[in-house]
Image (tube, rainbow, N blue to C red; front, side, top):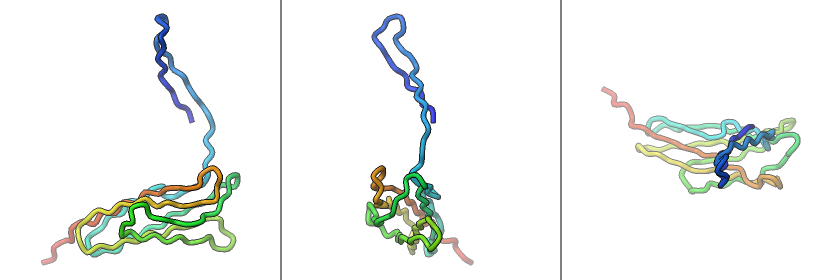
Length: 132
């Protein structure tokens, strides 16, 4: 990853300069998808699955799952099956009316580097189609 920072100084000869910072980014886990966006008609049940695979170098265990906003979005943590290192979160939501729901899932880990991970969930229920 490379980032450029504009630095302002009080030097009249060179009052600004670009500072370039470069470094390798190592991920703690592969999270797919990183955010969940669901939409459907009122009355539908909308579902998604998020997979979380800890990296070999920064292995961790998921200790629990909480919702930040206590919405009606359901989220269930599924432990890895034998032979797998991937955790899953099954997300499900249903509404009989037109509405938007949002929540942040807070995943608690035993990692010293990232004791919590967050996944944003957005659900939109649109108007049912009129039938003749």
